[in-house]
Image 1 (tube, rainbow, N blue to C red):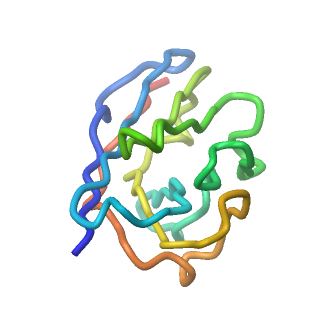
Image 2: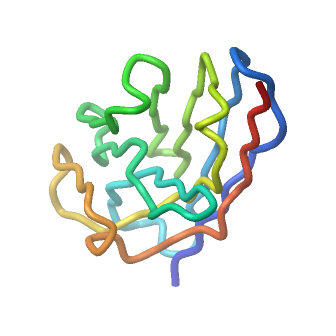
Length: 127
């Protein structure tokens, strides 16, 4: 059993920064590729960022490139999302996701590829 728990969401103003955290617990002996997705009201879930188990490879959604940075400390089973220059359109529920993998340098980016999901954390950005 694997559990993911997000933290760090909240209220921010346009231009502010927030840092989200995701902790993996349970079967932590496996290697996991991880990602952040988000879903805004009335919109489909979209990929924000994804990162390989090693942390050496990452990919970002077009809307956050240059503003958000994903990182991880695999030894501590933690993943982070540093969000800078926040915009009102970044308002959404942010979800942490993970999939077990044997490939340390591969990342995944399709929702259906991820087996484990957190409950989500709300990020609200006002103008």
